[in-house]
Image (cartoon, rainbow, N blue to C red; front, side):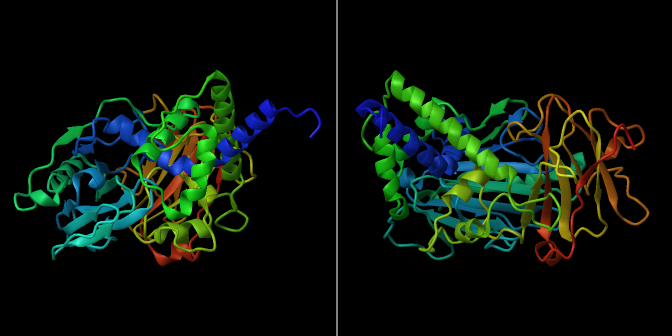
Length: 449
């Protein structure tokens, strides 16, 4: 190539490979940022919020309508780990998953998981474990040294009493090494309510430092060995300190910004879930099928789709479309991006096919978080005082200020420029997945209904 020098050829190679490595590593970096912020000392404990989460939880697309309970575990370091789940009741329903660091679900937990709401003891085994496995456990073989459990106590109604009952139920959940199973020790618990928790993915050198920590701590999976060479090109190798010089830093920061921009563009142009409408699921069928079976299909490895979903969300679900399902929209009925200065109405048709609840949550369009400073983030079927139309449909409004007479059904756009919506189905009926029931788009209704 005319004008090429060894130096700029090398920089272009680093940039090219760094973009691809950033896309491949997105899910693991998402996990590593979460772990390093919430559990930096490696202690086994349950992290939870004693109140429904608010904007101070700057996690990617958190659910503000239920209780989060989570633990980071290290079976590679501590040996087999037991996760003990008590039986659910009609009042205390648990939905959750145990995932490896790539956010691949080892198993779902609770009502729609392997224990079917009856409770059970899950045993997470480290990579290559060949020891004796005792009877009476639901065995999960993990292919990474570390893993995590994210559990959701689904509230039957949006009241303080339901919240208190859910927290009491969660205190019965335990996690401990198999070696201590005879004692069934209590698990330490840490309440994060009131703390500012920022686990947004950094598109700076911090991204590469997080990915380096993953490479140093985890085994290479067979499907990922080709990326070892890509990472070596950018300066990340097992057993070698990651110490890029100023020129390399500039190249790597440019590359991770480009990777992010590419993923955002894919996200903004995903095909619709319903023909002719704006709602979409942020990943393709290859991803959802692969995620359920740890990407064992040797024909395709959809790591780009994986990056699209994990640049804006956290946690994998094995049986997607059974316990939970999610749809996202960034646009109004006419295809225009949702602007925070405008007023929109979205009509939720009657008869939402869910056995638990539905909700629609607003997130900042810039970074997929709850809008900072807001006090209300969602409208759900559990909400006291929800206004329901005569035909059973529900009108939800999104506006700069709550609309007089429709305060219960309004979410304010707050300090944001654009916003996105996530519609959650909990206890998913078949009419959702076969599209017999369809969600309407948001419609501009400026200045007010």
